[in-house]
Image 1 (tube, rainbow, N blue to C red):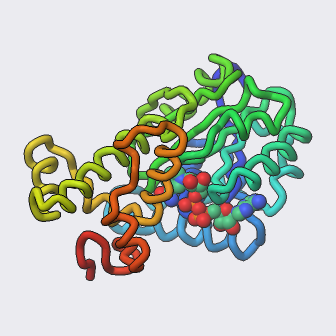
Image 2 (cartoon, rainbow, N blue to C red):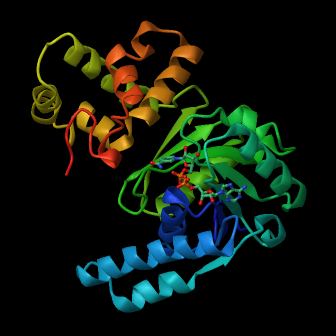
Length: 287
Ligand code: NAD
């Protein structure tokens, strides 16, 4: 790795986030290895990347040749630990379970070259706790991308205890090379994005509970009054009510303020299986 220049990366986890991160990095010219637990799962991830690129080609947003070059920069594997030679950065995008992430980071740390940076895409777990599974706290950070990765402009970098400024600088350059705008947040519960987004969502739910206005009008208040692209209740339907309940419980546990206490309506909807768009019903009915 030349200073601050990340060229070769491994993405671990080929699911919703991993395949998008791999696609975006390959489109920016990085050599990417996409890994998951089996060849079948990695192939499914590659299939999603191919479909996404084909859609962009069909829509005239991307040349077929460029799409082909992007795909050709992505290799696949099932054991990232065995593929670390010459790798500048590993981005982990496996499920949101601390013991899984700590185990992976510990194994990566034992095999990676000293200069390799290890980043986690966690949306809520303490990055410092993941970093402590390694002996390279200075080269561990959060790299929180947003879904869908190719379209969302933000990369939220999380500075854990011990993360060096050189690591933050390298990740910032990497994010900018991927076309993202980068913010840097210290390792605190919910970082900046989840803490703000969830707080707004919970307040909107309390207003709905209290009969202040309909879901549509609460959403329109922010969409039209403050130019939010989507109101907080509709957004909660897209994210998943269960996902937001988990984050609210986590913030309430860690930060303690009443504003993070999940409203009764959220608990009730989750208990009733009204989880949002993915099941066709949340604060709204979805086709
Ligand atoms: P996902 O379930 O879609 O994908 C996770 C993938 O990891 C699966 O394909 C699974 O087979 C694989 N996996 C599991 N254990 C593994 C291991 N030990 N080694 C290699 N691969 C393994 O999950 P996702 O939605 O892509 O989320 C991944 C991470 O990104 C989570 O930490 C999540 O909190 C975070 N995140 C998700 C979103 C989102 O909108 N989905 C947004 C930002 C951040």
